[in-house]
Length: 127
Image 1 (cartoon, rainbow, N blue to C red):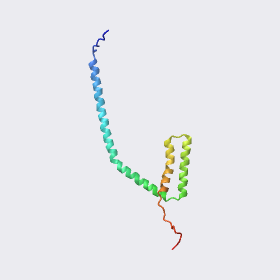
Image 2: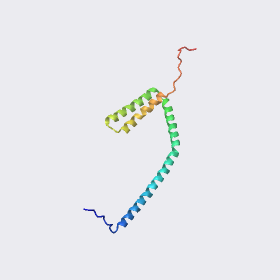
Image 3: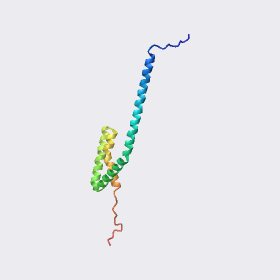
Image 4: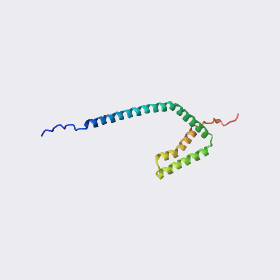
């Protein structure tokens, strides 16, 4: 048995035209999305150096302020932060929440480590 080719039905030209119109509309939308993405990326990259600079200045100011606090205060804040994070972890809260609770302890630890050391009199004699 041979398969006979199907003859086109009436109205097929109309559906083909509609398909082409939809395809053209889709192409125009895609082009618009690409152009918008390029413009947005340009704006983001233009502001990136300023945002990085502001973040660095803020982090330095925070570290300097923390370094002025006494060790007992810093240790208490760090211990509270770790305890809160451990409680969140045991309670089954999302990892992001747990990480946010432990972040102050990490910042305080960095401030303690980066604290400038005071020169001490190693000889132990006064002259």
